[in-house]
Structure formats: C-alpha cells, structure tokens
Length: 201
View 1 (tube, rainbow, N blue to C red):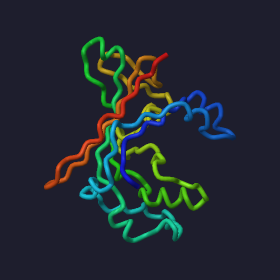
View 2 (view 1 turned 120 degrees about the vertical axis):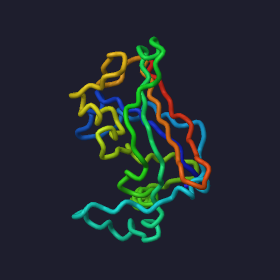
View 3 (view 1 turned 45 degrees about the vertical axis):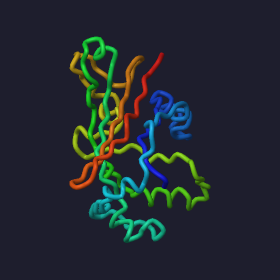
C-alpha cells in the first residue's frame, strides 16, 4: 500500500434494499465515490501503527494465509475518525456541521494486510494505483456507527439536529463530511483533509 485516504462510497439505500437479493449492493454503490484531497503515505503513518485488537473469545482463528504474527503486532493503525452532517437548515442558521459519529481505525476487525491478502487470494489482480476501501468503520459505542443507516437503526430512530431537523436518510442539499487525525506524543499529528460531498437533487 502506497498510502491512505478517507473514502465515502455513497450508498443509495432504496436501490440497495431492492437489489440486495440476489445481487447485493450493486448499482446502489456504483454511482459516486468521494475521497480526501491528498494521500498520506504509509511511511508517514508508521509512528501510528499499533497491535491489532485481540479477537473476541470464541471467534475462529483466521486461515493461515490471513495470519501473520508480525502483522498482528503492528498491522493496525491508530487514527481517530469523525463523520459530520451539514444540512441547508444548519447553514441558514450559521451553525456548524453536526457530528454524527466517532470511531477509530483500531475498530476494524481485520488489518489492512489481511484485507489485501483475502482480496487477492481469489484471483483479483490489484494493480498500482487501485483504490481499495476497507468498508464502514464503526465503534461499539452508541455514537460510533459509521453509517447513517446503522445510526438510525435502518431509519427507525431519526437523528435530531440542533435546528430541530431530523434525518433518517440524506436529503437534497445535505453535505457529509469525514475527518481523521492521527496523534501520538513525540510525533507530529497528521490529518487527512476532509472527505466532503453534497447531495444535489
């Protein structure tokens, strides 16, 4: 891996619900992707490498091609993640974007090396320059859901914003913003820039 960025692979949940059986998320995810304005190199993130979280009791051990002791020792990345929503209503009242969730890349179940290994073992010919997404990163805490669908429990519990607006799904004019920072004593903090995109109807 040459480096890392933030990525939002926008999801059309209405399409996704319709095509999930038997296709899975097909056209529901093929229409747009937003990334941060720059790539942070793997070398720059070396100080923020940490051990992979211990697997929950009872979870099966991964197959041999997915298990490397060195990767388990330093294969995870300590990076704080935040997702925000900025609606036209918030803008009209001069209010900042509303934070929806907080998580950390340490919440990932698999290391980046494991993801790449699993992707390629089936014959996918990843090439230099390919963009590879980890999938949604969610923490166990109530405010740790990385997707609005999770946060609203599939649209059953709307999010209430400081303006009194509510959201179960995104609406025209809504802007989604991802931010991430790595911090460690004795090292310069690293930011990824904003992964920012607005729904235009």
